[in-house]
Image (cartoon, rainbow, N blue to C red; front, side):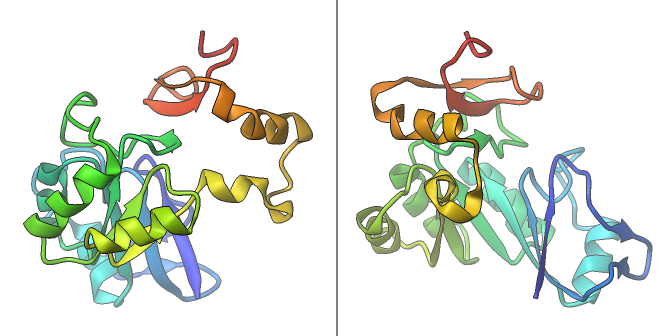
Length: 193
């Protein structure tokens, strides 16, 4: 199956009023920062979202607060990624302040599970079986790992980045807008300082 990522409201395929055009059929879309980060308060009449839903494409989107999870459920997504504060990379916050989205994953999971009828996928700081088990015990139906896979040979990251990841336990991470203008977690370095 083709799995497309829609990020910052930009997509890597064309959406018209009737269908998404790609070379292969799409079965899943993951939106890293909401279905459409602009004017997300009410997406129930969104033409692009409705077009995607008509094609039976499964939509997964990120929430950093219970309020965002409720907005996503109302908008018609099929599953919610509960992104804890520990997550690496860009923050999925879209309808809350970034401060409101600073909730640890293991506090956020049961809150979103209780507030939503959708499947919840846990993301943020999980790197081993113990973290996976804890997330599932708290009600998540799945777990998303990101940074944990960067040390795999298939990731083909530069040796300097790999060394920084291995040494990260001795180094501070920080949320910063330095990379793209939107908050993202990174290992403290000269750019972040």
